[in-house]
Image 1 (cartoon, one colour):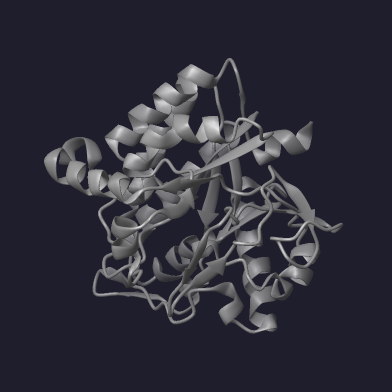
Image 2: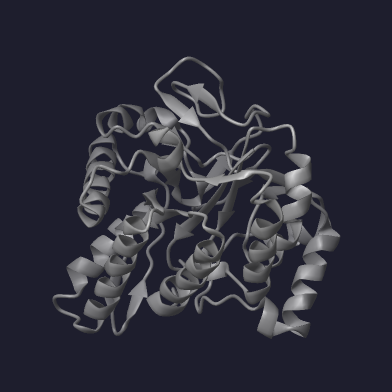
Length: 327
């Protein structure tokens, strides 16, 4: 099986975004150390809108100069050492701003489809160009939508073709959520490792795109009660390294604590305890995409990842989109 360790390289988007150091730089370095220990490579889906805003505001706010330099240096280093750097777009950065020493997130247009076609083309094209200016090569051909908001895909289709984006990894089987700010519906997604598509990433059809979905797992309410309890009893192991707060997701916590839910196979927090279970449940698949967020990484999750790679690197192939494309 091909196993992809993918990370959304980003801040938090709630009332407090957190710092670049604690949400991105430090936990990514810890992840890199584990990967280096085992000789495996990671996939970083880089939130390019944040980098563009850093570049814009560092002129008038010198305190952002260090963040910009450290972030761009880390991305270059990761790429030079063989890690995969791919495109992640949270378009609300178009409306967000920096003042009084902090980022102010404006999330009225959180989804890329919230923009008109002209702006979608501008955002995708300029964000891809900015990312590739850091690697100095045409490297970005895979995409993950911010908030998994890849629908309706018709609004992306032509600009993806124009920008040579051929792979999406936003879908996860049976995932569904809807709020004022973001939504996705993957209930109709096939139960496959990957598939080609044309106009709908949840439909197998001949087309120029490939969906390599994030692994999906069903969790019980008991799992989340345990998660919240451990966070309070042992914060050293279970508190995220990130120092921000998530964007609001109305009703989501109640849902997690009261009913079975379908979620991504994730390295975030205590979710990393389910890696072995997820691998067993996906044993008949050719590929397993695991998602994580450096900001949500915990010491527990880091240890779980270390053990997971050690246990499975002789049985499975830890790979990246770039490695597979080059074969």
